Image 1: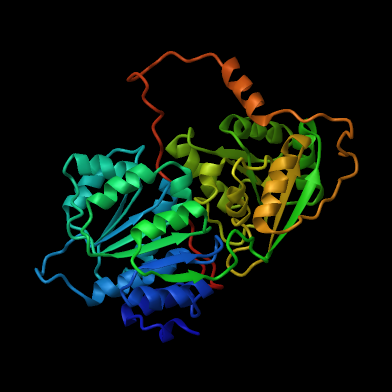
Image 2: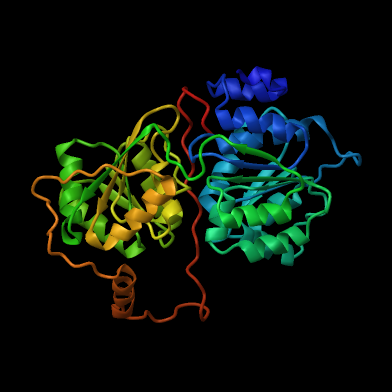
Length: 428
């Protein structure tokens, strides 16, 4: 199947062609016709399979061929995402593939100044991409109206529920017109997602292009059992002995990410960390340097698991297994994208054996294990509660003096921008 077979207009096809794409991915081939029909949709696919274009392309088509009866530009589409990185990526897709349609869009999220966002909204929009918190803030200030929304998209809905956005989502839903098209896209079909869909969607089309919670078959997965104190030396050994040039490493905590970067730098492995406490400048530089090949290792927390999109990333390492099993699928989904193969390695200590069993149960797959010579785990080691160790670390840190409003959370920073995709398979 080609994009020209899907009923998309010439301006949109031209933009797609300029990016070097001709054939849709399976999720795109199924979701684009479904969205164009105008009905509700519940869609699931593995991360990295092109869900974003699965809804942005038909939305652009619908808006460009159906104008408001008033003749004025109205905010007709709302796309909600859980993180600012994802919001920025969706907005980039809207801009890239809608550049010949004349449609206007913007993205809003917290942690940055609201005035430029308010100005962009006031200038008139067709499409708004937003995170729930900032959208509610601007709604409370009467800076944005959702009265004319025709299409609502919940992107990465499972992650939004994981992050506790259900109450915010319900507040936003209450402000929307009753008659609208609802599109719910998710990487997984959890019980919570199905419950949300039951209350939101009206006789939806159901698309699932891969088994729920399964891992991309293009990703080779491997477990290295190791003692908790030998994880850093083992990671350095793997990078150096295999001459890995680009490795995305996931840690459980921000403190752990910073500590690992310090250790890797001492080993001569160029590294930077990316997480919620990093400044905008630091996050942007880290991601840009990593994409440009100036860094060997980018160390990230789970907040970035669905926000980092790097084409042809060869290696992902789970330095720590995630607390939530579903996050394993999203982490390793950063590799094996755009038709290329990838390798996902997990360094697992005795404390994480139950997490590993939970992950294998989720993905319905027994993961192969390989002990690396010189890093054999101690057979007499005793597991320690991971949460307890985390709490002890937090309690050991001295509280800093307040420098701003009492109880104010650290400001979030602006997202890093994605690089252009390779001219291979359409995967955005």
